[in-house]
Image (cartoon, rainbow, N blue to C red; front, side, top):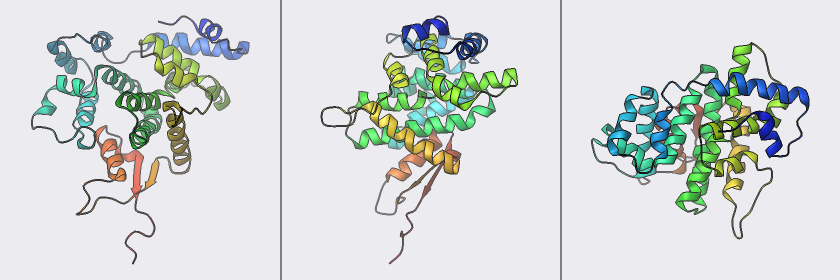
Amino acid sequence: MSGTMESLAAELKREIPGPELALLSDIHDTVIETLNLGFDPSVLLVLDNEDAHQHEIEQLKFKIKEQIVSRMMGRANSVVLFGKVKPGDAGSFTKVVLRMGMKPSKIYILAMALFLLDPSLESLAGRSFSRAILGRILAEELGFKSTAVERVEMGSLLIEIGRIPAVLYEIRSKTSLDEGFLSAWHPLLGLALLRKYELPDYLEETLLHTHFSFLHRSLSPLAVIDLADLVVRQSFSRHGKLVVESPLPDDTTESTLGSRIQDQFSAIGYRKFVDVRLPPDKGRS
């Protein structure tokens, strides 16, 4: 677990003006340190243990919010992600976790728990899951290996995680934080959350990177996250949701990228944050 915001700033060699550092420390001490996810943190410890017994995993569904369980099951049973599933699979939370992976399951459960802490976080959640879904699709279309696809999806989901404690701070203190302050320092608050819940190290690089990066012959996972972020920011600024143009499936097409996006949003309960529109010339002769 991380120390104070002062120690994080020192570790990263960031020069933070005194008043801003004091405010970051107040957000850390009054919000991050006292966060209540609505379930016992031991849930996350089980998902950290690759050797956890299936009975332990199955019991987790009784310890977390029903809303989170249903969204996890919806995602794990998504045909576009995992193919056709056998009847009855949705009844086993163990199969859900093993299908998604232990670490991704932990990240999804934690993210959903954080976003469900207050209704005012719904738009941030919509933006975050929009990035995650779009980032995953871009990574798959670029031919990334499964581990890189996972990194893009999880990094895209959590890149603004530091805004969550900031919003909760605004609610509790009945104040409004400056957007310039938030844009500059939410990654530091996000880093404190990553350390608190012992999330994978690669997510720290996601929060802290500042340059668009290439690999030898391709975009890097961080570059794909940047692209997804750019598209989502622009769309949410204009429409309040992710709006894309895509042909929808017809009698001869099983799926399109547009339908895959819709399916993934529906599976995790954020359907209201995506609008797939037909191209303007669709159907014209």
